[in-house]
Length: 566
Image (cartoon, rainbow, N blue to C red; front, side, top):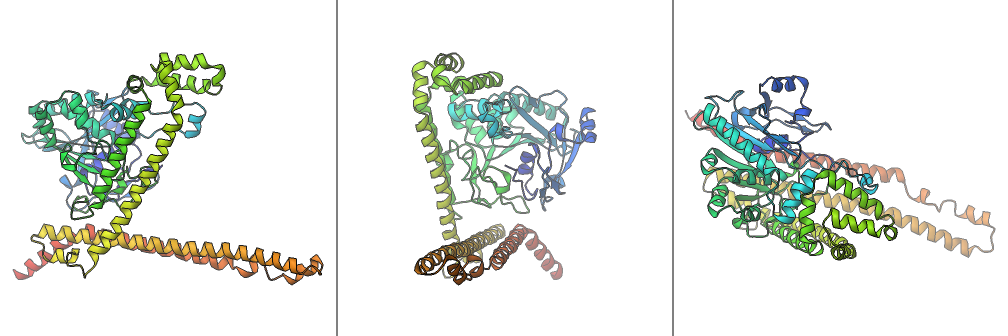
């Protein structure tokens, strides 16, 4: 699955969180920098990144330069990791420290601590089927992600985040302006590492943290309580943390089955640009789903704007909880604990051995038993239970996917209904009237933006439906003609029993699919539909850009008015 990147660098926190990954339009990982940048870092100097300019990823996808309100004009400086505190090979931890000045000095006011989330699965399914587990990213996905999801653990990477943050705070105290702050930003696994890393700071150290802006991450409250952090510490963290989560992303909705206002930090449920699953090409777990205006504001749902997305998120959160609880019924707690804390090389060896033994289980019963008992810490009774419950586990996964898909489809239907209702001029509570009665300039601009996004969403959906229906009509007509031709030829062939086969064939010369169906016209119609869809999609993108520039245009208009008055 290719990366679905930000469309523009309008929100600096999102841009920095994205840049912590490999293969992105602008990327921090040392191994992917050019030689000039590597040499600068090696010599102890910083490297400039400018998010006001375009960026291009490894597949040629372009992300446009930032909008009108980027801090420091979009310029940040990646600082060298002189003390090697920002990565750990054993746990898979990677972080990057960037500042608003090329060196940390009295002019430094804002710095950012960006933590990488889970690197891709890193394996080929066909290789897994062959028993090759060497490329599987066990550190991220098992030692950290699974450990958190299944046991509410403090993830192994968190301790390194705490250590790195402490060092940078000390550096700020010694070298930077008195008001200098550190903002933390991250995506996915990086959000868990961020919060748990922040929890390891003292109250005085937390005072140096501006805020933690986190994307597509779960609620970490249970893990912090389990680890023994006090209600006072949780309150301090709560005041610092801002989440942006996609209601269709299972990672975002992990541990979010409580009311939104009872979760850690301020939780913003985004209005995604596409209603897709995590496994889709346009994944709900990637940055491309965000709708961001030129001032960096991310479009979010509320009780008054697409509330059905709040409902969808809670449904997915409850589905997550139910599925995880069911899974834990099949696998002993001790076994889960051992698996998620297992070293990658041990896991690779055990899974390879088990893979080979299961090819002929009847002749390898003892070997399978020993792998389960000595390797995974699972006794024969529990191992037998797990194996016998594999059909139930598979069935549970299938049910999860079905319900997951239904949540997305239900939300999409409800969203379109909301759009139609709130764009209807006959409805006294529509968005148009809300704009007229808006009390403040900022509220008016937000409502206008929401109006445009709703109109575009509705138009896109209607176009998608009409094109799909027309394509279906063409396909159905083609199939019906094939059936009718075949039926008619059989009937005529049967009725002409007194004629020779060649005579009957000559009578049916024109009764062929090729004669009755013009494939050229059909392909032209399909091509025209595709072009129409692309043109309308382009129009929708232009409308989105209009929405993004509303503030900019309005302010320029106000300036012109005041200029003429003076």
